[in-house]
Picture 1 (tube, rainbow, N blue to C red):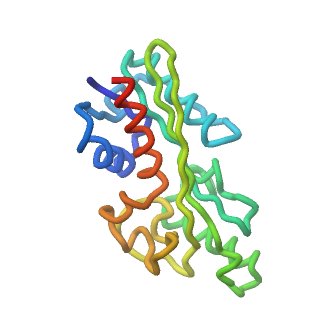
Picture 2: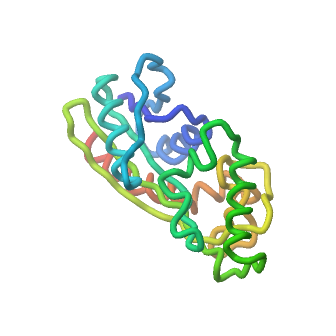
Picture 3: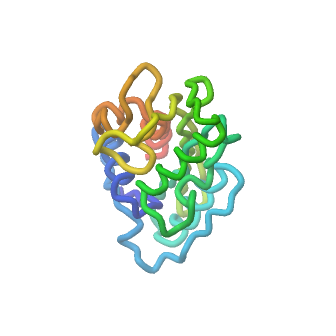
Length: 202
């Protein structure tokens, strides 16, 4: 069976494959294999709303099982920002490094240069939606708690990985590498829940 992931992010696709393919006999492909899928406007107020919307549209268009996630970084001292706008924080045209620097600057301003650990608490949140072409939708959600690093560190991963230190560690996701991240991350935890859902659906 084929499952289309509602993303063109290669890093995200690889994470999903590594978390699912060890136990499920399923072909995981990117929506980039369906270039005519119309643009999906992520205008939901929550991660779950965006994930459901993407999964339904991709399943309807491809006539395949579809999996969509909406995930992001929630920073407490920024009142939950960037949240559902994580991928677009600072604008559509800036890269991950610029986005991380912008976020660190915002946190520094709010914390009055103090960078107290108690003010830097944050979490990655991931909502996953699985949709069938017939319109059946299942959702799961998970999070990973941590703090924001003072400066970006590490070469692995993508997005905010260089500035997020998960609880129990002193290194960022980008320093820890994919092997450890895939055991700890919000997406890994959500995919573990999704695996159980997929097994029943398959």
